[in-house]
Image (cartoon, rainbow, N blue to C red; front, side, top):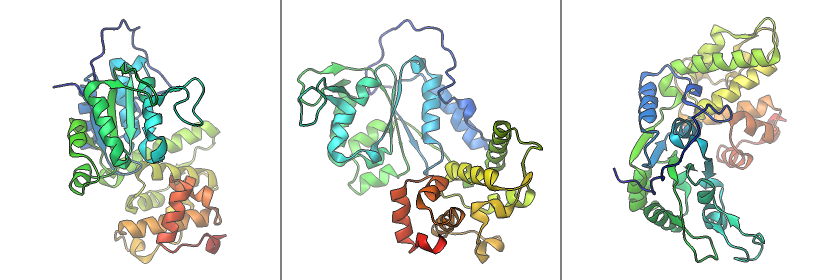
Length: 337
């Protein structure tokens, strides 16, 4: 298959060693057969130069999978550079990705600045939330992928690079193309090797696996004796929850329950998601996604006595995002202070 960006010239690399600072496939915990097959497929393509598109809901572990692919590849000795496209203001997008020369604009660094593409040379550039990229910037990205060169803002010299692209999104990019919000040519350029990570709710056995692994790590870290465990009743609450925040939400819930619970057992009342549960959970029926999100926010605010910053950390979203969702559901933090 045609490589979207220039193939790396032969470089004598030192023997590949395990870097404890980076994620590896062994860090991904799952008992789900489909997810295991996906991981094996990712291992098979780790050394290819073609772009990879990872899709899945917020908090499923897209960056974990992307970095694991990088660590498995021959590029592992070179940088893994992650860029959150949703977090970059439109005015800074081009300078962050492609860099700029000195004096390129007011406030520019005196010596200029390398962009993320240059920093990722010979390694991997991870474009997270690619669906949030401004439409006018998508054409510029496509050109770089086509000719394997970047030109800094204010510069005239093109620099040839060798970068492997991994993109990720929680959006349906095909639908975004249909709606005119994402370029079709860029979509087909990126959608060469596509992997969708299943939601935590789709792989329910992993809930127990991940929860027990986290508790074991916390027990080791705190030297808890006797070691803290999670009760069967609490585990049942975890199974019934819909997990709109996926693994990130589960991690935050277990962290909160471990450190705030008394005694050696985590019980339902220690779980933020188990407080003030509506009748439909008690009756073992599923919450809709919006109801689940509403309950998650209310429980986090209650657990932290209305402190929005602490609640946002528990849920695993930014403070600004939490405020927007509170407004959406007409939730007032003062009701829980």
